[in-house]
Image (cartoon, rainbow, N blue to C red):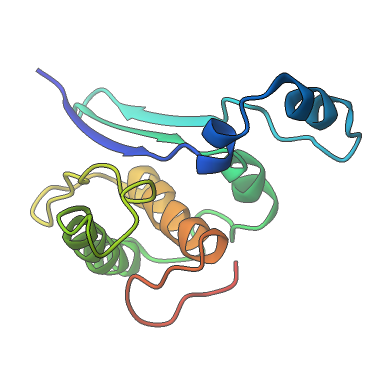
Length: 145
């Protein structure tokens, strides 16, 4: 059985903007280049782990703003991910205090498992994107890219 690490975020504005007139305006806007179902998936079948990120704009941000692969060491990414994921999971468990539309489900990230560079890189960059996009601070300094 596969173990999954899911980070599922659907913009609240997509759900709230369900009228056809608003959708028509958005689709005719030439500056709008973000796909409605923006999904990033990374799978490592040998380790049986998978990361699926659904968040409008993340794919574009990852390709245009994120620092390149191998910029950070694996140890750095693992340490930052533990900090971010721990705080994320704490916020999921407190829906009365933190917006449950932002923190929908826990992330099953365990420090004793070697997820590999690509999985850690993707999680780390999503956490940076999330914090900058939604004006959240999950712990420590948040780089602008």
